[in-house]
Image (cartoon, rainbow, N blue to C red; front, side):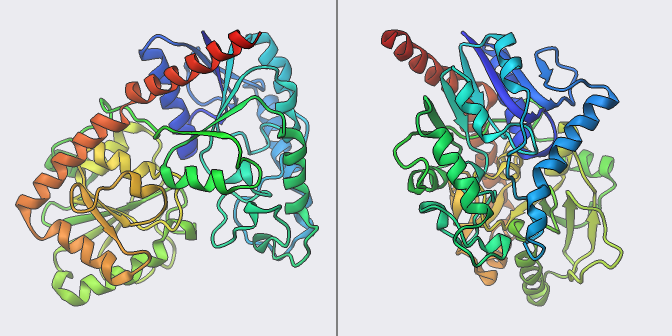
Length: 422
């Protein structure tokens, strides 16, 4: 069996990290796999860039992204968040033909990487791992309160559009036309996300399997707290609250605006001199917000070792996201033995077991988020049990080899069925 993974990148962003880890998992269980990416960051020989790695190749990839975004200029009042149209032609089909896979596993294909219509020209069984909602919307990556993806999009709130026939309807119709006869199996990383897929107008009749994102539990493992804090120059005399994500403080979906009032609650209830906040995924702003506690901004972190140190240095990880298809930082934190406090909503419900390895607060109650943080921290013996169970769950459910094995079983079943139908 020869499997080809298609992904925009092999490093940048949570989806890219998750895809690269799956690829590494395949190598560990001896599956013949390659990754075809637009932007190659690693030196792995089994990762192939769709564009040359020279300056010209990178310039072409960058210009493709810019051209893909051009129609958005007609919506000057749109929300300034990621919105993908994927209309500009690509060179993927010829690359796939050269690599001759038996099966293709699609991952995050936006960022100008792959045109919507390209999938109709790839004559191979497809397994598509959804990392966000883009595949079944008119262009947005998370829908927020909007449920128009259950119909045919249009009048898109993220475009600030009032017209039924707008850019979102155009993108949705292109998907509906191009993908109606695809030989496709969908993988969702959580039960909540599986329900979103099944409620969508584009994929309501498709097969959806649930396979959580994996991680390397040898790299993401508990490191002695004193050692981790010493290396990161973090205080030893405080309990540390950790918050982090790509665009941690600027992306509203990540919930920093919900964390701030929860910190105020903690400050007013006697914790002001006991806690510090650690933030990764964002640098310290010129005018830092008032957080009641001292904040240590670590900037953007990409390498696994530094991330493992950060998780291990903390006493609790807070993931106050409004929507997550899975919740990669929560599973990474678990692998390092750090309990997680999150809202009892979306993909995080599949990771955190309430009062077993963390705390699930009522969505989106500030008081209960603060209460959960206190509950995790206030009893040392309880905290140790939570930490042990967090690591245990990561080993039993999120290890790369387990994830890769689940995919292998799915791939084998699909290819056997395809052979019988020939």
